[in-house]
Image (cartoon, rainbow, N blue to C red):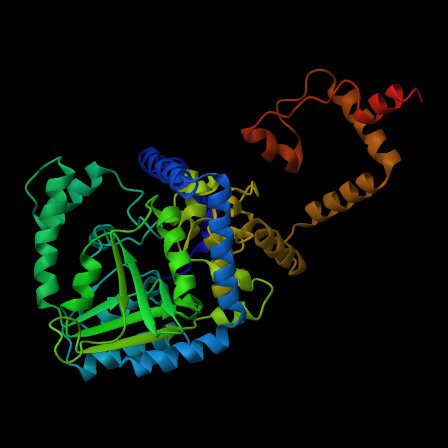
Amino acid sequence: MKVTANNFIPAAHLALMDDEMRRSVDQATTTAFQKRLNMMFAAGDEYGEALRQQAAAAKRRALNRLPELLEQAEANLTRNGVRVLWGLDSNEVNRLVLEIIERHAVKSVVKSKSMVSEEVGLNDALEARGIEVVETDLGEYIIQLAREHPSHIVTPVIHKSLESIRELFIQKLGMPPTDDAGQMARFARQILREKFLAADMGVTGGNFIIAETGTLCLVTNEGNGRMVTSLPRIHVAIVGIEKVVATLEDYATLTQVLPRSATGQAMPVYTHMYNGPRKAGETDGPDVLYVILVDNGRSQIYESKYAQVLTCIRCGACMNACPVYRSTGGHAYGWVYPGPVGAVITPLLNGLENARPLPHASSLCGACKQACPVDIDLPQMLLDLRADLSRQGDVEGIWKLGLKLWAIGNQSPTLFELGGRLGRFVMGDHPPKRLPGPLAGWTRYRDFPAFAKMSFRRQWREKRGE
């Protein structure tokens, strides 16, 4: 997927004018946010926070031992009969998949939802070679029919209304007109069932890999994940290297916080744990299972001060909590990962110069950190990325001068008090509706507050009788 993150500001302006999209996103994220709160803290705030910190500790332990755990995972996956491959970047991942397709004479591919495959542009690479690729997660299938990209990492079709999906099914699939969501889902299911039965290869992502057992773990709410991994003769799992965890016990913790944070469920509908291809005497499963471990810039993040972002479990909770995402939707962010985590990951994986507006696409309210099930400090990372941009010279001269003057004024008690007096004198009881020059951006969308009639410093002195 092409990176267009530098167009965030004009794209956000367009999104703010799309009332239908905003209603759909706001309704869905509000519901998801409340369901997460209800489920994460169903047993009380103390229990919910303890579970959250236990999950954070599990991911941080894995991150601290990542090179060692990757080697252990490779050894145990191989022992289980899995063919393990390594993809340094998107081109290599796509090349490896195409080689598998050629080796096994694959003609058609079905996919379960996978953000890392979106990241490397797998569908485009396969379609360019004449390989039929069908997304089988219903939301992803809708997005594929619309020739769009997901706008949310858990609910990819969050920006679309029921009416727009109905029209899409009528136009693209010849569905008889209906307003019943259940009938629409059944119609799509009939088409997808034929694709499952005809496919030569299934492609999935991976939510976790357990290093100590060599187990690939998937979490889904639709039966498509099971169909993709059991009906085709070849199963290819494309998994980021950061998805490895140390033990089954750590996985047991993480598989509790993931559905609670993503969809507000105690457990997902389907929890899949794969320990290799079909063995002698077994009646289902693939003949061959490949796991492609994807780097694609993750090693560089691992060696940086932003390494903690690799503990992300892709639950989408930060997006549901973020006021910016809830206003603009996901497409404005210009790449695979939107929202607060996308504002960090996109510049780190694609270069800060290719995503300059994203670190500023936040009010720094901290809602993303509070919602994160593994307690990633996204606000601090956004601040650090802004500092990186400043060091690269990505700040206009007038703002540099203004910030220097502001710093001087705030470091001097005398200048600070004089500035307050001057402000009260100039503004009076009625602050202006519009501030001048570069400060006009503030009053374009909000009122400038009136100065207090008496400063805190003066009240303090009077109370002390000074």
